[in-house]
Length: 137
Image (cartoon, rainbow, N blue to C red; front, side):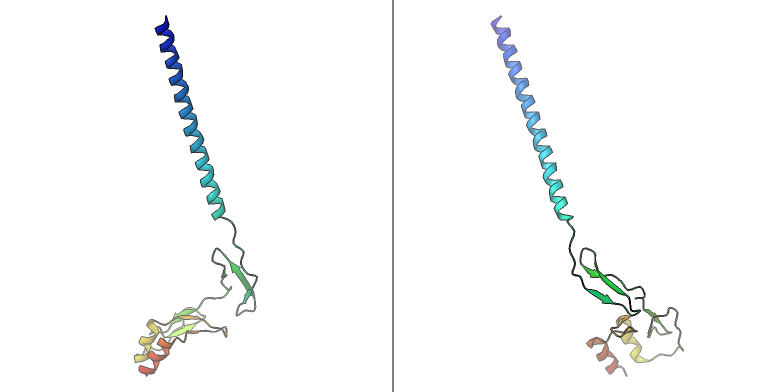
């Protein structure tokens, strides 16, 4: 009878140990998921952008927005490249020109057509662009 009691006691101890190991594993897994959720929530905290505005060419204003606090696009911020040799920068799509070739038109291939501080769509006058135009006159 003592053998059965000893075996039974050993079985009970093993079941209790196994159950305890399962409970500890579940507890650790649950706490790890809580830590991960907390970390993710901290990353999603809103970023406060400075309260400044950009005045658009049409007179409206846009504020900073998004994760990088960049200015929102102005309502009419589109500039278009046109002309037969793609040498015209304009706020109107589909502008055409006569088809002639000038050496300086190669400079427009790498130039940026965008709205300038004066509100007009023009080629951005970088030092490279100006130098290219001076060389290719």
